[in-house]
Every structure is written in C-alpha cells, then in structure tokens.
Length: 426
Image 1: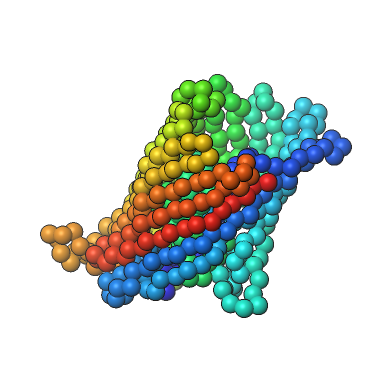
Image 2 (image 1 turned 30 degrees about the vertical axis):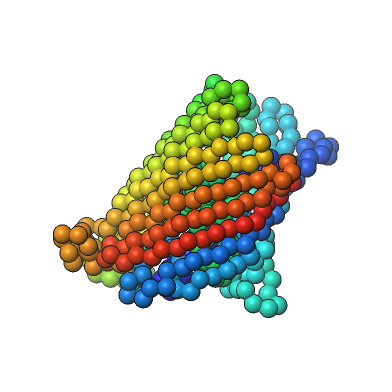
C-alpha cells in the first residue's frame, strides 16, 4: 500500500491542466499593441471509490492504480484542476509573438507533498497554487513558430486531449486524500504527456498537415534504480493530419504519430545506490499513434502506444529493473461518444501494460505465466459517462468506472467508482 501511495503521489505531481480545453471560452480585450486573453475553469465532483479490501498478500501491486483497503468518499477536483490562464499576443514587425502564464489552484487542501501530491483533508488546511505554465512564442504563418518555456509535451498529448474523462474524473488515484487532480486514463490507456521545459518548432498548417519537434528537459528515472545524470536533452516530435470542419457538415477527423527518446545515466551516487552489476545508463524510446473521427453526433477515438525503457503511467516511471535492464511498455484505449441535444453519452475502455525486464523473470508457475515479482502487469478500466451542457459554460458530469490492476505474481485489485459533479469554463 505504501509503494502504491508513493507512486500515485509522484504521478499526481505531474497531473496538470490541458489549456486547449479552455479554447471553449475566454475573456479578451486589447491593451495597446497587445490582445490579452484571460480564461480558466473551476470544477468539483463527489467521488465514491469502492476499493479492494482483500489481504495485502493478494492485492499488493507495485505500480497498480486500483485502490486497496477501505472505501473512500471525497469532494474533489477531477482530471483538470481549477485554472486561471493569462495569454497575450501581438504582431511586432514581421513576427507574431505571444506569452502565456498559467496558475492552477485546486479545491482540496495540500500536504507536504505539494499541491499536486496527496492532499491533507483535515481542519484548518488550505489548498495551494501551482504556477506551472510559462512560455513565449514567436513566428509567422509563412514559416511556423518557435516555443520556449514550460508547456505541454508533444508525445501522447492528443491521447489526453481526446480522453472524454478530461471534463470529469475517470480513475481517481488517491481518493482518500485527494490532491489537485484525478488520473482519468493516465496509466490506464496512455502514458501522461506531462508539462516540460522545452524549445520546440511547429510548422504552419499545410492543408491539414502539421509537424512539431523539440528538445526537452530530460527526466530522472523513478523506480527500482536511480538514473539522474543527463548530458543530452530529451527529444520529442509529432506529425498530424486533420480534415473536416464540424461533424454536422460531414466526416471530420485527425490522425497522429508521436515519438519520444531520452538517455539517462547513473551519477556516482546513483551507481553506489544501484549496487554492483547495475547498468550505468539506458535509453528510453516510445511511439504512439491515434485516430479520431466524427459524423453527426457520433465521435470515436482509437489510440495505442509501445516503447522500451519508457516506464508506465508517467514518463520514466518504473522504466527499468533494479539492475537497469529495460522494461517494455504498451497500451491504448478505444472510446465512443454520441451527443444529442445537450446530452453526450460515452463509453471507453483502456489498458496499460508493463513487462518484466529479462533479469526479473523468475518463474513461480510456468503453466500460468506467474512470476515472483509484484510489479504491475496491467492496469485497465472501463468508463461510462454522461455529460450534460447545462449552459454553454457549465457541464454537469456523471461517470461510473470499473478498474482493475494485476501484478506478475498473480495479485489483483479491483475498484468501482462513481462520480457526480460539474465544471465551468470562462
């Protein structure tokens, strides 16, 4: 249980708002040469999580995302925290320039882990404000744009932007002590894109085609072995093609392909901690692909990823064994929604898998493919959601989530969660 809590806390520290959702609304005005936009959201949900109360010897799963122990009830944020985002743009000479700064508070009280870690639901506590988005851009429609600062990544970005639980909760993570966000489908269908310091270039739109590539702050490996030294940046790139205007006018859609790669090395202190025989470096690589299409009120998403040394749930979380041998990762999700009048109904299924490294494959029962490790083998869930547009700014949400985690040694944990609440954009 402690291992799972630490992992969810580490994941929670990276669960950050997707600003593209805020394109639904905004307050803008002109000040001198600048056009200023202020946008954001506030949300709140009642979440009841039915956890697996089986004995720890049968439910303990390192990296498992289904909750164990007592059931929990919470009033909390969903996959999105609250947000207040300031953006400004201007045409200066031959360049379009812009700047964005985002502040992300939550409604739940913070603990020592910070505003995005496990919360502290106790008297006389207070939530925190996370200032985690800060970047500027310059460019022109003739040649593209350059972004510098901290913003959403390229790899797996579309996976979360198209996740229907983005306006709701999805899988909850730590519901007994909620932080700023839930998990949605993070770790249960895709690896979280994260928000990372970067310098990226994006092409202009060529008849629906777009390409982006950049260098990113390399990330430390989190798990059984430590790799905290980096002498080269992380690299991400993505290409996409979109067609159509609105589903009511015919078939609309988008296809995309992304890649991420990074090398991580063990510092002198890491090598001592990792012990004799551990690899001194490893490289992590992954690619993903997806398609989204819609017609009339129907919309569907199909997404998948595969990689090696990339980990699961978050980038470079549990990517290797204790000796630095890489683990393979894979997963994806399928989603269908149908909207009529003000109501949207959605069904979604997804799973994420993490393989054992070669040096971890100590077999207990070869007939049933059971190994000694309690490392997570699979996190999966099915989600049914109802989303009602009360006004053009307010969406009321109801969800039911059936989740399951399974370890390589046969341990399992089941979770059933129901959600009711709402979100407002401005």
